Structures are given as C-alpha cells and as structure tokens.
Length: 390
Ligand code: FAD
Ligand code: UDP
Image (cartoon, rainbow, N blue to C red; front, top):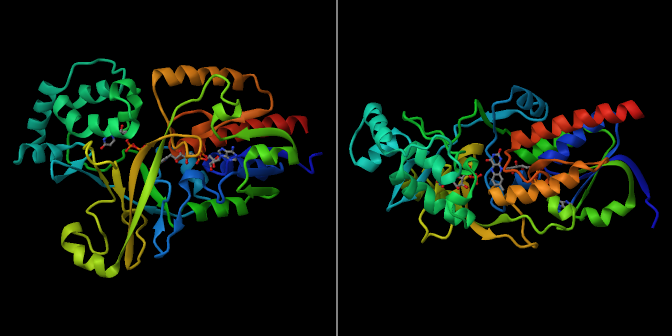
C-alpha cells in the first residue's frame, strides 16, 4: 500500500519525550504525527479521574522535580504549578518510620531523643569505608552502614528489582538521599511541584500549542508506519524492540497496581490513624521494605495533588517480572544490561534519520525533567538540521 500521508517527523510515543519533541518541532514549522499504542497521551505520566472523581496516577506516582530553570520555564508555558513537599514514610517492624533516613529515623531506631552530633558519630563509626561505591549496596553502606541498609534498602530492592543491590548500579539506590538533619523531604531538587490541573491537562495544552500536529492513539507504530511518508523518525519506545531484539531482549521490570477508594465517611472514621483530615494514610507514599509483604509501596496521590474531594484513592504497587504483554516500566540498570544496551546504541548511532530518546529509547532510569531536557535538546538539533536543508 502506498503511504497516504506525508509529514516531516514520525514520532513514536506520546509520553513526555514524544510530545515535547512534537511541540518544539511543530512550533518551528514542521509537520509531525505522534503515534502511541496506548489509547491516551502522557505515557507513564498520564493521570485521570477515577470512578469516585479522584485524580489518580494509574501508572505509579509521578512527582515532578527539577534543578533546571530552563526545563521548568519550558513546561510552565503549559501549566501552573502546585508546590508540594513530597513526604513519604517506611513501614517495617510494625511501625511507621521517617524516610528517607534522617535524624528522626535514627531516634526512632534508638527509641529515644538524639542529636545531630550523635547521629554523625554513629555514621562515622558505622558507615563502611568505600571511596568509590560501585553498586547500590556499596552506595548505601558507604553512607549509613549495615543496620539501616538491612532494614530499609536490601529487602526493598530485592523485592522491587528481583536482583541484589550489589548487582544494580550505584545510581539506583543512590537516588535516595541520606540526611544528617531532620529534613524528611523525599527529594532534593530545588523545584518540586505538580501541574495544577494534572499532567494530562498539561499535555493537552502542549498539543494545542503544536500546529500541524496529528496524534494517532491505540495503534502500534509498526502498523501505522506504512501509512506515512516522513523525513525523520523519533523513537521513544524500547530500543531493543525497534531492532527486533536482534542482540537479545533488554530486561525490564514491570508493575501491577491495585486500587482502593475510600468514601468521605470512611475517611472521617480513619482520621485518628492518618492524622490528617480527608486522607487515608499518614503520608503521600508508604514504602514496605519487608519481603513478606508482596507490594513495595502504597500511594495516596491526593496528598500531593491537593484535590478537594470527599473521597480518596490509594494505589498499591506490586513489582512483577516483565513479559512482552506488560508495560516495560523500568529499565534495569546493571553493568551487564549497560553492555547490551551499548550494542543497540551502536546500531542507533549509525541511523541517519532516526533519533532515539526517552526512558525506553535510551534505556536509562530517567525522571520526567531529564527526558524533557533530552527532547528539547534533540528537537533543537533536528530543527537546525532540517531547517538548513528545507
Ligand atoms: P514513556 O512515558 O514510557 O512513553 C513512551 C510511550 O511510547 C508510551 O506511551 C508507550 O505506549 C509508547 N510506545 C512504546 N512502544 C510503542 C509502539 N511499538 N508503538 C506505539 N507506541 C509505543 N519521573 C519523575 O520525574 N518523577 C517521578 O516521581 C516518577 N515516578 C515514576 C514512577 C513509575 C512507576 C515509573 C514507571 C516512572 C516514574 N518516573 C518518574 C519516570 C517517568 O515516568 C519518565 O521519566 C517519563 O514518563 C518518560 O517519558 P517517555 O516519554 O520517555 O516514556
Ligand atoms: N529503595 C529502597 N528502599 C526504599 C526506597 C527506595 O531500597 O524505601 C531503593 C530501591 O532499589 C528503589 C530505588 O531505591 O528502586 C529508587 O527509589 P525510588 O523511590 O526513587 O524509586 P522509583 O520511584 O523510581 O520507583
């Protein structure tokens, strides 16, 4: 069949990477089509209202954060922000703990009050001397030592990744801060906020700001590709899938989500436990490191959205092995997978009219701001290249 339509850019994936690239390119005067096999835009950052009217993150919680003024300024064209101090807790040994590990956690562990001085002394005598941590076990041991590693990191990581922290690159557990003071914010970035109306509303504004953009949802790019003639493809799906797994499959971790909604009446009865009016659990996110609990965390996103509604929804996350029918939520950052990815990257580097970006296109455990930055940079490069030839 002859291609029926012509565009400058054929973009696979309507997540952050694909839509940011599409917006920039179409603003520069290029025609784009974005194709996604899901029936909605937003990729994993998609949010929506559930049956009770609660704004939820169906693919896991998405806490926007960034140190980049450029990325925040770019996204701010499409949304206003609701500042949030993301706070989480860990639940183990029958109680809630302050998390990420900080002076409060140390006091909870001691069962009495302490001081920054004592906590610092503890760390100095218990942390393991490792100058250049090479993996996720070493990165935590080198900061807090065995006791806290064994309570909060080793079992949680085994459960989440089905791999020992020793097998995972240092960047995985190294994402989690360890603090000497009582600062219990989950994240460290200077800008921490959520789009006021949610991510999907932000993406809709982004698309409305994209002249000459067509979007095809609910279709695999392999089926749609033949209908289009294009100058360049931007691919944000899994890079190994693009190359038909010719070097073998890259591993991914998947997740299963279970949802429970609670009415206003249930919330009022619960107030003593959550300690917060209109909320079910004491924090936005509760992590469950213990291996005999099959889920890793429960998230009540209403803490972060600040939605005013007489109900709430809590989502429980169960890590799962990835199979081709499931979403490849996490690339698995080990030295072995990095080597396999490098082989695919070498193929990608030889392409003249295909760009690979995003979490799956580059097989990197990137956050939303990082993939936004990557898409902005790639779009700038493509604009220069194709403007000079058109
Ligand atoms: P994706 O959002 O994965 O989009 C890729 C799109 O390509 C998907 O929609 C997919 O359907 C589509 N696609 C794939 N293959 C095909 C095909 N064959 N044909 C057509 N379409 C295809 N980041 C943060 O900054 N803060 C957080 O708190 C945070 N929490 C997270 C929690 C979880 C559980 C997960 C999984 C990720 C989290 N992230 C978070 C990371 C964030 O989701 C990513 O950085 C971001 O969404 C990546 O955007 P993307 O466009 O690169 O990829
Ligand atoms: N982690 C852990 N215990 C926790 C929280 C995190 O061991 O209570 C480890 C785990 O390996 C996890 C990684 O740190 O995958 C990064 O945690 P983060 O909360 O950033 O995970 P994400 O939100 O990306 O799933």
